[in-house]
Image 1 (cartoon, helix red, strand yellow):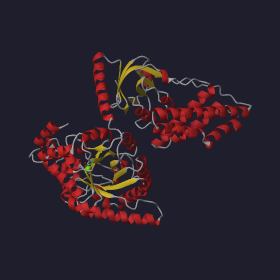
Image 2 (cartoon, rainbow, N blue to C red):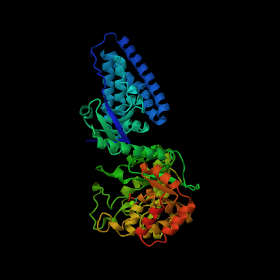
Image 3 (cartoon, rainbow, N blue to C red):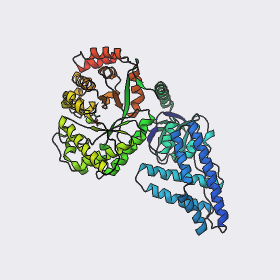
Image 4 (tube, rainbow, N blue to C red):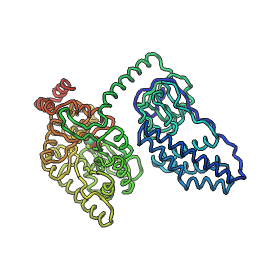
Length: 568
Ligand code: PEP
Ligand code: MG
């Protein structure tokens, strides 16, 4: 068994077809007739542009606009006067042949892009490599690998799957994709997902380890690959594949639909993200916005605090990806179980009850002001809303709002655009905030209930401690009462109340949350459609009846058992 990166969900079962690029060796000799050689280059460039445009058109109709943009980007690169000018001057000044000139210029750009530690530039390097191969093929009159005519049930095994190769794939015949390179956000992954072909990427040497015709199973969710499976394993995965396809078909009918109850009560269904790149997945999964961007991940796995500009770019990228849909960005929530070593914070006896989140930020202007400034600057590019974590009292909200007003004045002075009416909301995840919800609702523009922490703090339980973990449950009547209180207090004041803790995706809790009046559910991107389906199964009246009964019960076990009996 091999394990790679599960980049496109689903089970692929079939026979391996190893895709090897043909040799692109050429005779690297000097040319004397540079005019003729430049004309040869231009003919190849024109042919390549035409071919790429045709592939983009085909991709647009077969797959989608967004995926075609990758190939349209290639056309722009092929028409870039800087790049083609360098190719011409190599021929003109150094007598290079067209092949050598294309190779030299493309390699230069590939190295330059690859040297920048940013996924977008890494991807650009792959794009240039793809263009180089296509141009060389045209110059050398080498046929493209024809992926359109592979037999049904093919598992493509390649070193990498370039956008131009993927464009030729017929998803009816390709049951799966395996590559040696590429990650979840590489173009090959995006295209595999768009074509709904299960894919596992990044298994070094896989084209050598597998032979043509080998029987293969791949699981595009967990990245597992089995070669020559026995009957038992094959039967098991055939079952899994049937289950996956059934589930997918059932959920597909919810794509592009509003999130509504059976009797038409509309709620918002958003997603939680940790990195700017995750925003794309939310769009792909039909999320209606971002309900929680945990910005602390921008601060982790690096040696120093990200600068205001770096943060601005990250927030702007998410806002732009969501194209005007709401994006709730939570300010730094560090401490507790989330550590940032370079901040040099003291070890605490009780980190969950200590110097974390907004408590830390309000005492660290150097940390907090740049973040708020970056958020305000990015608010000019979409519907960004600021969310304050771990609030326990009104003073904290007022202090943040005061700081935001000061920064707005600064930005105005500097002529930097921002959203004057930016909404500032809070996470309700402490018992104190829950008890003060009616008062906090007058100060905050929205609430988002963080059930992960609210459960822990309400039950006074450390969920890492196995001896008390049994108390950690959102079905506990104490937690449910707290949730009900917060939703009702927020709604009474006319503000939006969302939930971004794990409980938002729990189908058993959906009737209670709907009955209490929750406006927004924020779940992981992959849970969006299942949550939309779960909500659609209840009428408000049914949900009210279930909530009424559940809230009269005394124990967590009773409530959970009851919710299971009425589950749809
Ligand atoms: C929560 O506490 O429910 C929450 C969403 O925040 P986090 O899980 O990041 O603490
Ligand atoms: Mg929390």
